Image (cartoon, rainbow, N blue to C red):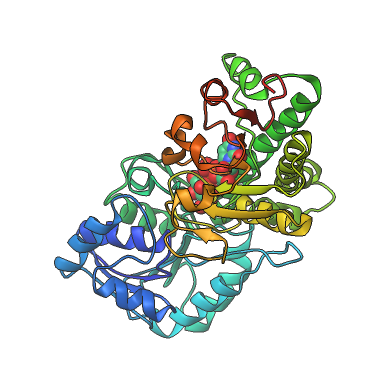
Length: 425
Ligand code: SAJ
């Protein structure tokens, strides 16, 4: 049955989710505090980059099924998709979730369903949302239904994953779960698994923590390999041929608003029991420092005393424009601290966020001694060393993402090195 929805938060999750509901016939009112974003969305313009979003936004707005505004409205279903970051001290900042819940209270009526999509520490629905929603005066679980249905999509492939991924739905009771499942069935083709709200919260946090711990393991293997003359990328690839081994890949650190954040939700709840989780977070957080040290070391080995670095890649992972928690930004901070000069280039980041960001590859390479790859954008994988070599002062290249073929670069006259690979230089 077609519903009216009020989606609070029109960011990387809320906006794609809103347009999906809208193009599947529901009437969606999106809410955001960002005036500019609201205005852009109503003009069918994007304030974020995501494959396939532009055409779907146009379709949703043209069909008259999607409008954005600054305030919530009455609806059958409320979906909350706001940020849930961590504070400086690594504790969960649930202010946005709390405020979004408070903002819908005046609009909630008997029979409504409230769904939280944001990733949160286990018990947030029960301990934070339910008390706020009690202010409606409605009987929670009988007159007002609440669930957690965590988003699980990967930036860059959001529309494919919104449809194909399995979904977890955790209601505060069975009716809440069933109502939520029926709603998402309008576009989800994956299985929808029902549970309680707290288990759903836990499952979502576990997924990202699993990945963080696994990446930390890969990074540790890279550090060991650098010491003992091994190519960790090759060794990990070989180990992964075993049917029960699936090691992730090393790199200059873990970015994004999820994997670098969510493990702290578990650490906060049980600090003494989450030892591997905390160690992994710290291991991954140290990788940008290590990458910067390696850059300095490579320059020293070639007797370049005041190296100029061309940093390629600012977003936190390949082929997206999102810089939140990006390891590149931390590498930059380390280089600044070391007094090493650099210019940066990222074809996905159109605004110059820092004075040393360039909008042209040639400008970034001009006078450079070392080219450093920090993000494995497709554009960088296709770089032709023969074309690059004339543009630089010295021919050094350091690849932190295994994006380049080192042999090709060596053949073109470069001294080519890779993070976690002391076998090849
Ligand atoms: N990374 C590595 N090595 C790897 C994989 C990733 O260093 O083997 C780095 C990436 O370069 C990046 C960071 O980790 O800096 C995170 O990237 P990602 O692609 O692993 O994940 P996200 O943050 O884009 O999205 C994750 C996804 N969760 C899982 O895969 C379990 C996504 O499905 C979630 O929806 C999303 O978090 C979220 O919003 O929670």
